[in-house]
Amino acid sequence: MFMAVESTLPTPFRTPASDKDAKALQFIEEMTKNVDSVQERVLREILSRNAETEYLKRFILNGATDRETFKSRIPVVTYEDIQPEIQRIANGDKSPIFSAHPISEFLTSSGTSAGERKLMPTIHEELDRRQLLYSLLMPVMNLYVPGLDKGKGLYFLFVKAETKTPGGLLARPVLTSYYNSDHFKTRPYDPFNVYTSPNEAILCVDSFQSMYAQMLCGLIMRNEVLRVGAVFASGLLRAIHFLQNNWKQLAHDIATGTLNPKITDAPVRECMRKILKPNPELAQFVTMECYEENWECIIKRIWPRTKYLDVIVTGAMAQYIPTLEYYSGGLPMACTMYASSECYFGLNLNPMCKPSEVTYTIMPNMAYFEFLPHGSSTSCLVDLADVEVGKEYELILTTYAGLCRYRVGDILRVTGFHNAAPQFRFIRRKNVLLSIESDKTDEAELQNAIENASLLLKEFNTSVVEYTSYADTKQIPGHYVIYWELLVKDSANAPTDDVLNRCCLQIEEPLNSVYRQSRVADNSTGPLEIRVVENGTFEELMDYAISRGASINQYEVPRCVSFTPIMELLNSRVVSKHFSPDLPHWTPECRR
Ligand code: AMP
Image (tube, rainbow, N blue to C red; front, side, top):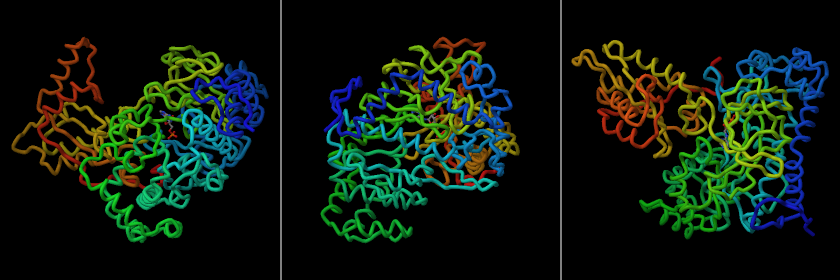
């Protein structure tokens, strides 16, 4: 029998789908009702277990585990502040620096420091905490969408390259770590959470082979698919683009029951051998649907039972909403969770809401959370239970793995409460100018990259007068566009097409490793483009801003643009377009 649960979730279906779901919902209720006491306990646990670590001893906590002492002695830090200690751990120092528990591996964040992914130390038991958060997602979803046990989820999930630090610790993205864990690989059967993709396909590091096998399975099981997803919106669009490029071969495989010889990974071949059987009728269907020019609604056409898309479309991913609406014929988009390499934060308790209304409820058992009111000094931090509706805050974390009062860099706005737990809208990541996928390029990086490329123009007596940028995601994959206004002093010796193409590559080379990895290994970002604009264009841009109320004295050229009238102005002044002729350098190893 199902347990009766007093759920305060504002849902149309209040009955949990199973006993297991009832327990998960009960847990959410307990956590959200007792936010402050749970937070107090979490801080006590973290400080007492890590009392003898080098970091806490440095601030003379003397075993204190209360909030007041903690807040008065421990500084708020950024990654750069703790990088020397991180580097020591990476180099093999096994002494308890941040955590009494051994560091099991590093999780490589998509946030970068000096061009390289940040290394986040983690401990083995954090996997249990991540697993716990995952285990809450379907029970909430089942309240809104009944019958998800009557089919499967087509999820495009990928692992990325792993490296080892000089001291021998693994360094890899958090999802790569999770998919490779027993928590994921040997998960018990759950009828509400069955994937079409076999583990072998998800765990194949070659992104083409992995995607090919996952798409093939999705097509073969098309009538069983009830939800289609990827972690981020950009990943799902990449899958659709992949189908556009590879449907002929996929249909051939389905028709003949033979696997594309480009799939060479032995475990993938072995598992596909069991799944792939000749099915000319299905092959014909795939051909008919994909042959057409018009790909509108393709998701619904190929997977007609799909009830929703499961993808994050908040934050930087919001730019993909219109394209996803086009391909899915307006299916609901569920953003289920909010997480990072440092810590998994929380979940969306109303996952079928509109993307613009998504809020995340931080689970107080995951870490100790503090909030810096946006624009205030670090002496004014507020506790999770004390944030105020309507205000914006920067998220500060203290984790079981030993990060203490660490600035994540995310800006969140409080929109309301579920029980005593605040609900947050993701506003933005600090200092991010351009982003196509998980790459985050800031203004200083772009400036440096532009300066690097301008060196090529010197011998042509040419300089960059002004520039701005744009993340073009109209096509898949998206790419960076740089608008350049040039001062050519000697028109007889102006930079050639070839030089300007090479300038594109020169801009890409110094960009951070996440950007270069997405260009080289993941193919999720296209070649960078320079659009040279007519002389005087940036002055027109200033005139336009002033006509809309900007002050002449304080006017600064926007280094990234997306506002339609400005885009139209820039695009109408383009005199030539240039693309990066090659891939920038990238290897999984850090450059440091
Ligand atoms: P990483 O450190 O590479 O794991 O990336 C984590 C970051 O991705 C977070 O700090 C956020 O900036 C962003 N992120 C994660 N989940 C979401 C979400 N649901 N909505 C918007 N941004 C998110």
